[in-house]
Image (cartoon, rainbow, N blue to C red; front, side):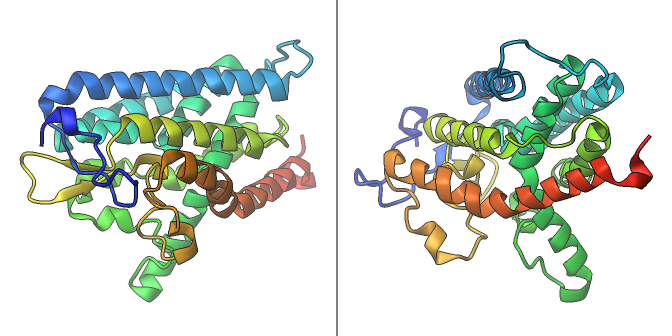
Length: 291
């Protein structure tokens, strides 16, 4: 398939999945541009949301004590190594995964700890809440069940994901939330508007990825098609076996994306966000953690 046909649909009615995209090293400039622009736009959107929700009076109020440069440096190095190692091991197509919500959430926390904006940490936590809580369930259940019951970790068993770079640099799914709880302790915890802001960000990311990233990638050195579907932009994740969630898979973006924005956020992050909010409030007001 030629690159010019990369994003053509197999059916003009949007009832079938898009054709796989041939991604080679020649596509590196495009992939870098798409990822850089998407990350920049998400960051700018996050700053606007911070100004609207955390400082609605226009005062640009900041919590000057919320400044953790060592955390920022650690996350920046971790993210850079993740991108470089995955690109080295998998090639150009893997760069699109930098636009996943969990990876953008890392960027938000880097911004938060350097710019003294704890609101952005709460948004990052809400973005990853559903996925990363399911990771805990899967990892704790696997020794007893021999499988990942929720399917959140199942993607690491795909043939294209059985590599050190994919497995090691998926570790943030385990330690990211505890780190966020730690740095927001004493700074108000999760903001009450974190979930609303996260819904806006995830909806933007899904629309952006639907427009500019492939559903599946075909790579020259592999004998199978690589499943991307970044941010569920084309269909609800294939390992989620709930038929109701898949009724609008691959439909027209004007049909599927609003459905994803509402149902996806409520199902994936609604209850998990409330769990994290409860933990955050407990940590903020527990007498043993005061002072």
